[in-house]
Length: 470
Image (cartoon, rainbow, N blue to C red; front, side, top):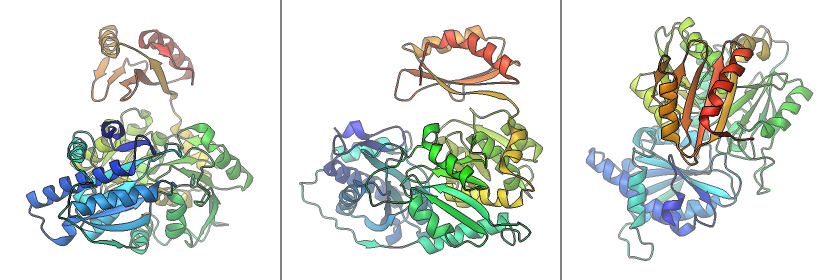
């Protein structure tokens, strides 16, 4: 049962089966075993290095899983600081602010209500995933026995870090927007925020609730009902409908939808049109590069070609990276990049420990809107330079053979295998990646114009398998 709850980047499963409180205890014990050993191996022997911060999202199953997890952490000898309901990026902040040995967020992110799980980080807030410690947690958890005697009994305390977190974020907003929202605006910046009944319902009021020059229209901030108004996945267009209608109805400057644990967000403009993560990264990048010539900006390699073009035009250094927060954070750190963005709505900041932080992205969006002479749609429109397919899925039972056929079929094109197979024919460019969990190939295709895009899709589709209808 334990093996069923571990995924590529975290623990995520339905509750109470297969994810039970007993398994949560084992995972807590295994996490503490790894983090305490790492701390001692690196010479960190102070009490804070043996302390693990724990937060949770507002799902009804999160308190019970949090309790079981912390019991397991403490039984292995770790002390615990319980932060309560927080956004996942708060964990990274807390680990660094307090100098802790690591952190765990109880969350299932964007999954439906019946799911829950855990996200892990070590000292410095560095992520733990497959290839960077998650397998070790699973192995250590598998041999942990809640019924056996335990010598350890770490301390536990509750702590509220909203004030230092708010101060950090608003200090960074001040750096992007010296003097605050300009007084020459005829009215405050009006944003509609959809918290998706998740952690943003706690974060947004505490960080942005009384910010001068900002008017917030709140959707789905409630936690008490134990249900979601819509699945907390802002990448699904149908989940944005309530936000889009509210933005138009309230004549807002823009709208933002957060996922369940508020580490991702999606922007819609004043017309209710969704702005892709790559285009939002391209819009924000020049502001992040101001005064930082040749600084790196990391981007998801599936992104529109307009993104690296925009980074270069702003004097920056575009750095493509593999898809996924583990790889993006590694690329941020190894390249000393100042900013990064993914199609999935994760945005990464050097000034927030190279981590994805949607609250920090909201600061950048707010600064960007406050500086605009016109509307968000007018600012984004020049970035819609190329025709994009969006991500298309194809059922395929022999992925390796298909990728080899694609290599042979496009041997005259420029090929890259950083993540799946990227093909640049000069007429169109595409990335084809295998799903981590299903027999699927995922296609992202771009071309200079819609007709070329359609021709390229007709060329590629027969080679990729059976196209999914949804």
